[in-house]
Image 1 (cartoon, rainbow, N blue to C red):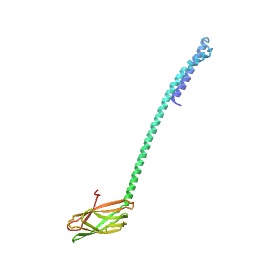
Image 2: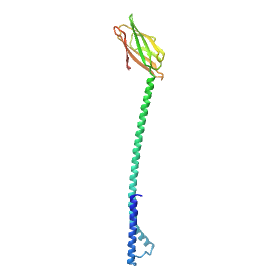
Image 3: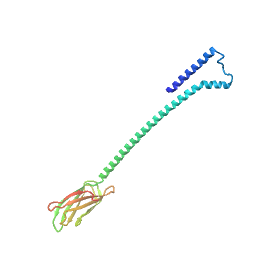
Image 4: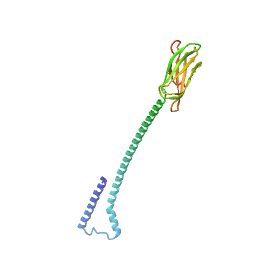
Length: 221
């Protein structure tokens, strides 16, 4: 029971008690002055005048009660809105976490599908053209359609293809180049087991004396 309702009941009882007491006291002192109405319309006027203060009282109480209920409803709606915002934020964080996990899993699968190419240069021989034996070892995932090609001109390659390059498999080839060259850029292209065509670039530095050095390169494009 609300506080306003309790006040209304209390004031109504007090009003009825006071009104009845006043009427009874007045009738006891002067019975002729306090006579009951003789006509129905007179009864209506008496009852309307008697209960109009109570009607006004309960109108005010109802108005205040409605205001309190509206405030409670507004507070409940604000609380629901805050909970919804929290749920949306939680859902976004969960979605972002799942997206990152999916990207991480895709990256792991991508890295696991790549070969790990190790190149071993066995030196060079002089002649009309310089030659160097090159051994390529794959210590990563198996790939297919591997091909060794050069970007630098005046270079030839023996055994430039390897249809299936398995894990730990060696691929031996030989490079020949003109004596005036100082470096050779070459590329190894292949298709991963996920059917993704890729390329890796390398540079072979050709010193005047000594064994050529091979360094990896980023994609020139």
